[in-house]
Length: 267
Image 1 (cartoon, helix red, strand yellow):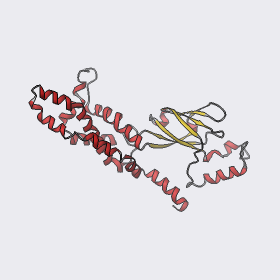
Image 2 (spheres, one colour):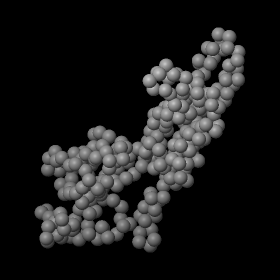
Image 3 (spheres, helix red, strand yellow):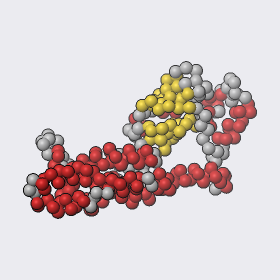
Image 4 (cartoon, one colour):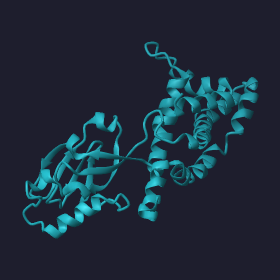
């Protein structure tokens, strides 16, 4: 079961179905050619429009892309446009480029038979090869980058760029939120529930109050439920501030990289 499906189950478990129906289904019933599904509307309004973008901004998913899998267009002698195919990104948007990792730039395919390229000394080559053999050395981010579209960016000042480089980028979380570690699911479920409550309160409160003024006394129980969601937006904003800390603690890959950087080859 995906993380989003677990969040949907939590929403249906906690929030009365009548409120879900009124907020997510009733407004779309006039479209007879596209019958509204409560879960489909929740995914669109709560996850796609809010929870996933918010979590991606607070703690995006880091991926490493081989440059050889991308399309590269030179702008001049040191600047390049890089287009990443959608299938490589799994149809996710690039939010930021951390940098180009040039540790593997000094290899035989780049230097030729003697292992050297024009303008690069043997000392530089030897140092780079030594760095490539030490996994505790952090990525060598020297070039400036600029994102220009959801799947492309510019690499600037990279005179030695070749396809043996890799690119570290931050992308949005996938549509199922499976890029978030399972140890953080309880937090994501709570955040999604608050987002859903805040949406329902905003969508229905004025409409319910207007109906009660028009004589709909039977809506009093409906209104009482809505009143318990009055602070959901404030609670959501407070909970969202914990996202970067909780998701980082749950990210085993990034924690392992930090330990490798801190402890070197001792671990």
